[in-house]
Amino acid sequence: MKWEVSLTSNKAGGLLLMWDNNVISVENILKTRRWICLDMYILQEGFRCSLCLLYAPNDQRDRAVFWDQLRMLYYELATPIIFMGGFNEVLPPEERKHATRLTLSMREFGDWVQNLGLVDIKTQNKKFTWRRANSASKLDEFFVAHEWLVMPVVRKSHSLITWASS
Image (cartoon, rainbow, N blue to C red; front, side, top):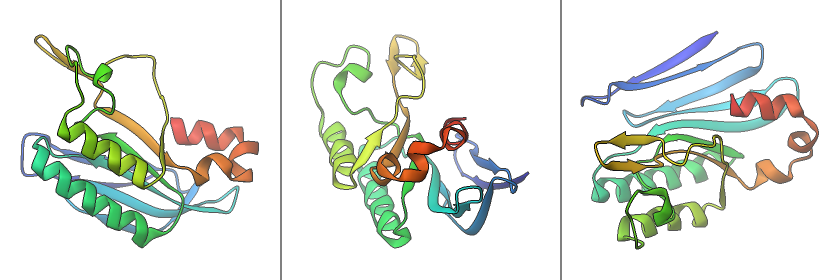
């Protein structure tokens, strides 16, 4: 088992990404205090891809900059990619308790998802992944590049699906 950590300077603590060297071979690790990204091969399938664990800023202006950084990373890696973690924003208003309209921040997040051609993978039955007092939102997400859905290796390999969602 291998791991990589990225510590933050705020109360969020940091990020920890763990992987099994018997399943994947990591070619390169890229990271900031907000994300860890593995450029890797899934050994059994010989499939090159990238996996990014992230924690987006709470502030809307900082998130807009963050989406641009991730967009540049996406194009730099040029592999089928998975983004997972705490995005601190929702796509539709229904993912935030008492929300009734689409905000600028939601639109920016939606534009980022759409521009990269990402697909939202529903990983759990919970309506909300974060709660505090009378607030609740679905902030933890799992997005994949469209290539993950059309690759023959993904369609035929149940073990890859299990690996990716565990």
